[in-house]
Length: 151
Image 1 (cartoon, rainbow, N blue to C red):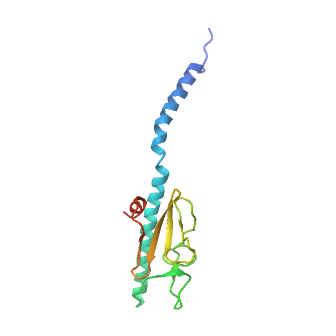
Image 2 (cartoon, helix red, strand yellow):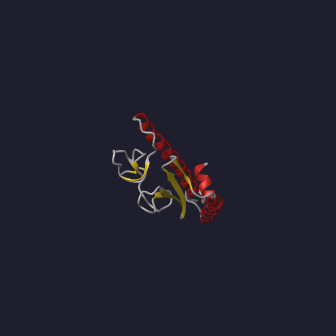
């Protein structure tokens, strides 16, 4: 009798069924991963932006200017950077952020450097404001997404 070294159809069907069961158990656990990743990225971005604002203020304090960085784009008359020099948050970050309305990105909806920014988690925009008087950068609404992004 000749011995074969192949799998039978029954064995292959059994393996496919087991893999299907494993996939059906694992997929629901991965459904929220994208949203959690966008929230984690947003938290990091908010912390980086806030640190950049404070860093820029410290630089100005050393030069004898106690004001906070201004809203707007470009530079002021005395050469100080504004919040959005060369791109979103370019006045406080080493590399400005690209503007987009897709999940995990920031945009300036007015496009005029008015200090209003949106961060997108999925298709939901969470609005942030920069206050040039106090130097604060935070959410404008007390929503669940806002609380997740700043806490």
